[in-house]
Length: 202
View 1 (tube, one colour):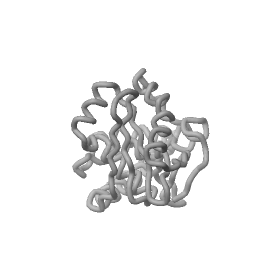
View 2: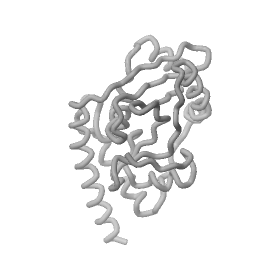
View 3: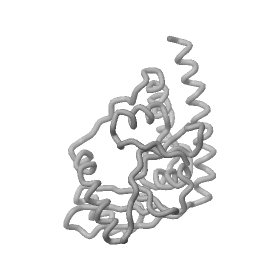
């Protein structure tokens, strides 16, 4: 694993992410069931466009998403206190020197773990707590983080102030990751090809 030391969401972080598949969007490539996502082409075109313009495309953010970003530090401190651990914050992680895809975990835990924080709205936080399982929508992201970093597990934390937090440990799923690797390799190859075609049109 290669770690880029920078602040998440700063200029250099966005610059490095531009044009690269990121684990937060792996659900655009593979479904929780391990099938190819129907959103892959749109995501591929977005990344190819980013490579041409040299920057991240503008992304929409509502008030709930902005609030989640603001609460992330509080949630991380809660996790550290409850588990008596220190969470190391990192900017961007790459699997190898090729840097074809990336991951921005919310922290590294010890030698084997990761932390992924979600600060959903109140009704969604209640739903997560009642279900007590990893929401399907985040399965590709969590497994993708394990694949990129080579870590063994990721703790998924759903945090809403005043409500009991939900902490779930998600382990490396080899069956899913084999499918992810195949689809991700194909996606990256196609992304390179589409980028070349676009550049030829410039």
